[in-house]
Length: 175
Image 1 (cartoon, rainbow, N blue to C red):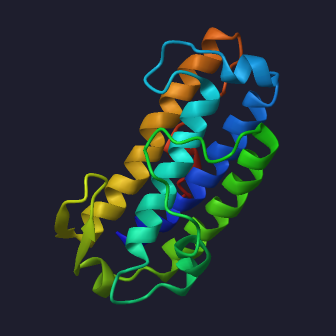
Image 2: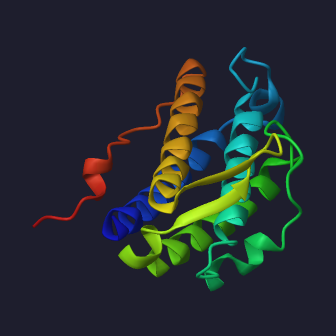
């Protein structure tokens, strides 16, 4: 799975670059317009993806391995809610996204089967103590991003913007 997670980290970066390039074609008002999606707007959904990444990576930083790649993320203020707008303007949000994606790539490179087989204890957003297989939590982390990027892709499509090819298959190297 460590090879798969490195691939997912690269895919995540490519897709986020593509997603933000498409979103940049809209003005702030269009980005923040309530489109009746789960998080309302394109902008709020992009913020949510970053909130989710921040929360999960802060939890991953508590792994007994103590991933050095997550030190900067661990030092960020902990988001208070899943719908928190942590960046008020698109340029700041995009800059934070680029930095987050680099941290995710470095984190994925530090994963090993030994670390992935351990359990991770953490507190969820409701304040409840949890202990789950780390490998499956990392899988959820990447699935969460993909799920919400799909929502943004639909919202962009409704604005007449085509995100283009998004298949993971395009990132898988030839054997």
